Length: 86
Image 1 (spheres, one colour):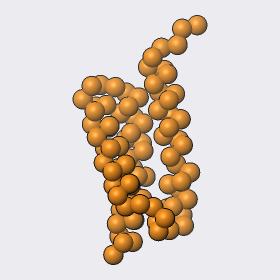
Image 2 (image 1 turned 90 degrees about the vertical axis):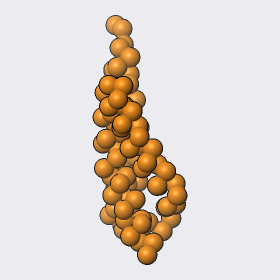
Image 3 (image 1 turned 90 degrees about the horizontal axis):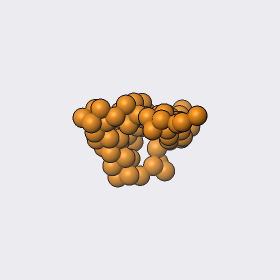
């Protein structure tokens, strides 16, 4: 059986995307963003948004889907961090 590169991409994207969710869910449930670096999360969320754009531009499904899915909770956590910093 031959594995397609696209299948490998979707599996890798799925694993890295799913690995992000436990921490994001914990942060959203607790509301505690004190231990999260604003700079790191800002850069991370910006990077995820740019990877999404890249996936769209080069028509790379695994990159696009994984990053769009990750962008939603990342943006919510970043927004909560920014609001909590005031």
